Image 1 (cartoon, rainbow over the protein chains, first blue to last red):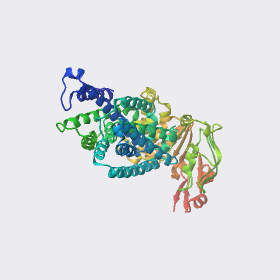
Image 2 (cartoon, chains in turn brown, cyan):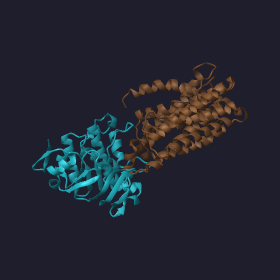
Image 3 (cartoon, helix red, strand yellow):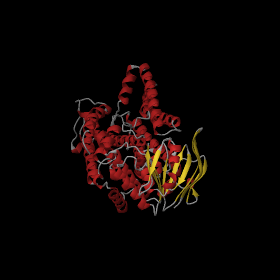
Image 4 (cartoon, each protein chain N blue to C red):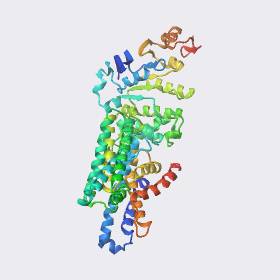
Length: 310
Length: 252
């Protein structure tokens, strides 16, 4: 329990505090309690915490339900659908009209893609779902490339920053509903962790062990996709988090979702917060999109953990 | 507890898989189902376990149609060992066995002492205590088969259906396994599918020979394992030798 929950929790608090102190300029303890920069950083870290946690949970669920270790939050085309929605908002200039335009069009794009994938694959099992998602993602990516090819250079620059994952412009008013959704799904997943374990064994095995396979697969895919969609709507397509955190936590802790669910959320949060701090510190006077840092740092760490014995 | 199949039919589209098959499983009797590849044995097990629904006829559990049971109610009563691949995720051996007790586990809390004791007991019983913390994906096919059997035993269901439980086991392991089923049969209704006619003859109280989706013959091993039946079903000759445990078919 100490190794599984309390140590990661301690790390979470430390990294969260570090994210408030460190950035383009380092704040003193007094400034932390009285400056507007600290307030901005607080919400940014809160966003990073829940987006990292949500993407990790989403990847964990997809890998279990689709029984594919390479599945991740964007496997079912959620990211590409959100990208089409966001790019449309940038090209139509909606981002200049309202700060809600990009998150809402991204969310709409993600959910429309998800519903289409679920509808197309309704008669089949996990394999059909996976294939439908991959094809939907490819089609959305093509539409996205088309939109970017007809956009002006300013629009392309704005959209690219978003597409790489961006925690700078997190909308505080949208953050709290996202936290509510994430916490609700987190506790539902803990309630259904036993079913998730069995779905990871296979549809036939889960059925014989007492799971309503069709219903639970649908609910789990919906939960994972909603987690991915709300994260993408808030911070763009932050890559790699939903792939490497689940693998890492399984190695460090356990593959049983009864045991690894809360550690999964905590480590996901720690990972994205740490990457966000790095994105502010690597280049003096300049910030990198957090998605670039998650990919660059996550890849080697993932390979190292993969080659270690549990 | 009694599990009955009454005149069940099953087909995939226009392809008939099972026709007019009936069977009764009850405690005190070990039923072995055998037959050539593709004869419908696994489909029969899937129908008895509720995974597939018969096109005609019905499966009854203590006189009630199996469809009327909820998923959890069914899982508490019927344990099925299907032909299972290694899991996609790295579950440990003890985690995989504990999953067998899913229907009994608390949702929000860690498994209780009774659950842990059950897992330890079946691991001892199957002789796999030494690799309880190993990952399933690191085991050989035979070792993983023992884990699956242990997971089934941990469920303590009154009905057990096993699809080729001994296929990946060495002779000693297969014998140990069959001895366990013989011990359990006084309180458990058991049916198992196997291609091993020697084991079937030694342990079965009732042997069912399935061919082309129909029950070709059913009875005691001595009644069923005859040169004529084997020639008709497998299309090859065999000599039937007597032994202290039952008839032994030597294929030629």
